[in-house]
Image (tube, rainbow, N blue to C red; front, side):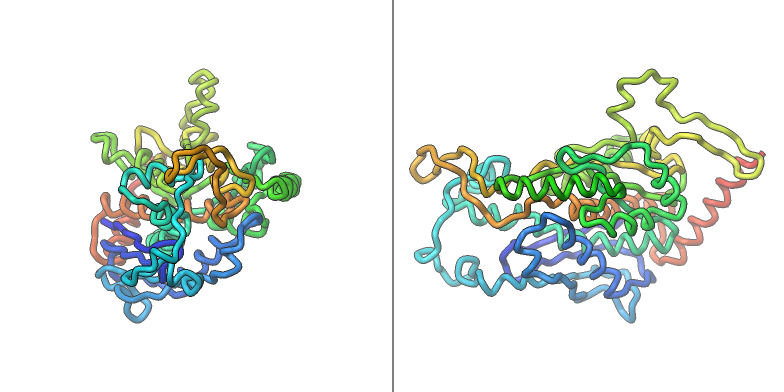
Length: 397
């Protein structure tokens, strides 16, 4: 099974990721990884850090002649900003006397709980590791699984449906048309927008909203729509809680910094309707086999993939580092004061969509490996193809 770990601090020398369990024989290029890293750095409302960094991944192990070899893959992304932090983030030399301690926590951030949990007298170590800068390593790691899935005909894509009060209509017919070409086509269309929205009116409103809150020293969150196409019926299982595919997908989303909620399909809207308007009816077509006219369940039934496009929705809160301060207190004096500002974005919802795509990829890849097994890509591909043919034969009338 594929698992990955990331390491590194926001202003340290580099971020790293180790990805193990990747089958041999998967074709991966440098551009595959760097394209996703560039996508993560885009988006209207990003802060000054994106003007400093130009992320690219160095592959140190696990790939030979452009193909995975079954051993752990090591990825390294250097932080160009490190040169400005060599004293305050020194690994062995002690520059504590010349480095100001941070003792004022920001509401909504990991600052306070992290400082108490790990016994620091300075919030800086918490800021460094809890920072969303870590997601650059996660995107690089997730891209390996994403490339594996793409070779199997499974694609992941996203778009932003709302930022602040700027929201797109929920019944956009263009979405279904794009998904028929694969989820990456949907993502490509979204990437053409600076806020990754499909509707131009909503895009303009979102940009204006970001400009407004930036002037006020505030931040904005939003909602990300995620789709996975090409997933066959029957991934995951209902037999134990830790094998439920829906639970794993939701866990992957809420593991992302600032993602505070997630749902499958129209989950919350469905609670306000009777069952007859919620469940996706079956229709047998003589030529196409099993068909459905709706996908309100979001491609998951009984914790397993239904064979339809998997649709997930993630809610990102506004970033907690504000130019206009909120009420806080100083841990050194225990006196009330205003929160401090750490360089940040006004809105990072478009980038979070790219991170979310990467976070979902290993979950689906592992569901494939759980069902079909195999140590080499050709083994897995052949078994999946046989299973897809079995599904077609099953539902022929």
